[in-house]
Image (cartoon, rainbow over all chains, first blue to last red; front, side, top):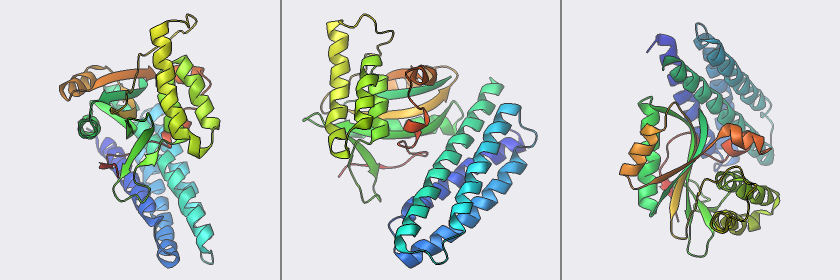
Length: 121
Length: 186
């Protein structure tokens, strides 16, 4: 397994964990939810940046999936930027929107891994 | 190839083992799992989804996405019923989805729908549970062998077939957990 392939598998695990965190945050109170959303946003941005690096040297199909996953994480991070003065309803909506983007990103990463595995057969 | 699969087991416990075994196959690189969930059909015919134990929703009525997926796995007739489920109200989804599987099974038995290009034979009988999942697999042996050992029966439908049924593939993905979890029925 190449270093880049390791990076993709690790990235999927990281985004799966982000999804789990966002799911768990949904049940929290307003203050805790705001902190979680902001932290998740920063984490999503970091993961998006890491994915762009991980895409280097991959074959075209995997690169496309990784680019899509990074875009979804960018969108998740963007959602988190405007929650400073948000009320509970807006926070919950933001959390749900980020959860959906994280789910999409995991899907794209999973597709990148599948295309990588298929290419090896 | 990208497939939607349903693996039918006689008990919840076997289905939970099947779910974990599926993700283990992903860990070993034999297949890639994009998402999976466990569903159960009770004696009244209602299908419910096993959620994570930490999820306050606990044992929930089958969601729109999984309802449509179950219908699609059952073939064109089930897919049509699945579309009805998707358009239904939340309260009606569980019962309607139960109807989806039953309708498709009846159609297979009666053989009245000769125009059907595909029938998987997928049936989820009352009391049974199933792992439903979206997977990429280069060959079917890893899943078939593993699930057979655990007492499961595997049904497949290619993602391409579903797209031709005018279903939006992403519709299902949101309903499946994108990682292994401990399924929980209240």
